[in-house]
Amino acid sequence: MDRLSVRQARQESAIGQQARLQGWVRTRRDSKGGFSFLELNDGTCLANIQVIADAALENYESEIKHLTAGCSVTVEGQVKASGGKGQATEVQAARVVVHGLADPDSYPLQKKRHSMEKLREWAHLRPRTNTFGAVMRVRNQVCRSIHDFFQEDGFLYLNTPIITASDCEGAGEMFRVTTLDPANPPRTDQGEVDYTQDFFDRPSYLTVSGQLEGEVYATALGKVYTFGPTFRAENSNTSRHLAEFWMVEPEAAFFDLEDNMDLAERFLKRIVTDVLANCEEDLDFFQQRIDNEVRDRLGKIVEGGFARTTYTDAIAALESSGESFEFPVSWGADLQAEHERYLAEKLHGRPVIVHDYPASIKPFYMRVNDDGKTVRAMDVLAPGVGEIIGGSQREERLDVLERRMAEQDLNPDDYWWYLDLRRYGTVPHAGFGLGLERMVQFVTGMANIRDVIPFPRTPGNAEF
Ligand code: ATP
Ligand code: MG
Ligand code: MG
Ligand code: MG
Image (tube, rainbow, N blue to C red; front, side, top):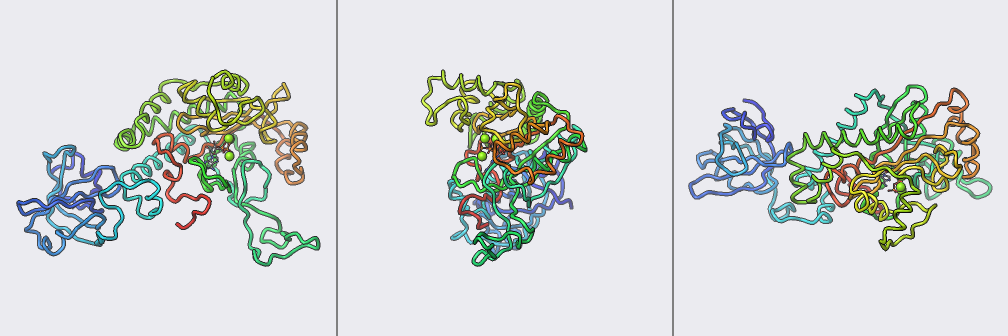
């Protein structure tokens, strides 16, 4: 007897096989003719498989007739053709083993639909719902495509540190890592906390980005990418910020801004192409139940090119848009979410890459243009989500980099190793960061970033 997943058993090619299936009951329906239908799900696909359990089974009265949503079972039987709607196959059970019951009075996932907010309170049970099963299968596909794309393109997978001492990269608020007693830390004569007595002899933090370390390896091994968790103590509650999220960061030597934009565009197209090819059933679900524009958006990614505009032109377009924005638009101010969405959704109707931002709003490491006022930064803005990628060509000239650090009050001693990369065999190079969860939001249409990661971390939420 073969062990089959529900996904496999639903294929017509499984008809006639003796199979063992294992999973969780979604519903039980008793027929007058003395048998019951069980809808069984094991997470391998969105759909359930129908199991027919005859009254003749020895535990029919004692166990099968008590099965309710959430119970776990092993079913052995034959896969047969089904006349039922939406299913090619069903299973005629010869044996049903009940592993665990689920008290219907307290099991929260009954037939009724729950709000996303409610489901967040049951982060341990929500993977058993259709929505979260579909999200996690798509997330898995996105991760796989990320690796496939970079591996096939000759990038080397690199693991950058989670704990780091570089604290002024400017990407976001950092979480401190310490072994000092918070109630009674050692203090200097001036009364400051004395971090020289801490585990690493200095203040240290959870990483906000692996970019600087990625540059170290790119300027030796050529093309690298990191893919790991990133931490930012974002103290605002938005639908697109988490305190712990996953980021993919390619970094490539001898790449300029143009190469970087081309790479980002090819990369996003590849992920979407793979999701369209491999997650059809789940995408249908998102299209019908979550966001009826998902397929349309994904189609546009694969078919057309991305729009590209300079920051300066984008500001001009926003100024003449006639829209009333909450935040003012002016050259020199960062784009807000509402501006990003206007550009991607209304003005261009497809992803847009905004590039060459004012130097004053960007970190020290971005390549300064000849005008002296702008830097070779790029953000990819996606309809529905806004910024999904941020990146730049990096400043490879030692003197310019030192000047920019001084302007931003950074201590060059803290970056001696980073500056060495420019002292010894410097090269033009570029890279970007894609937020995995923002990408999953984009391909599923899920409105809140808390619902595309298994265990969301946001202010006040770290229970499980
Ligand atoms: P935002 O403007 O949305 O706050 P950012 O400009 O601070 O983003 P970057 O430092 O450019 O973000 O990071 C690269 C990418 O990481 C972003 O384009 C986004 O996809 C993702 N990202 C950034 N911050 C978060 C977060 N708090 N939660 C989830 N994803 C994030
Ligand atoms: Mg931010
Ligand atoms: Mg931003
Ligand atoms: Mg950014």
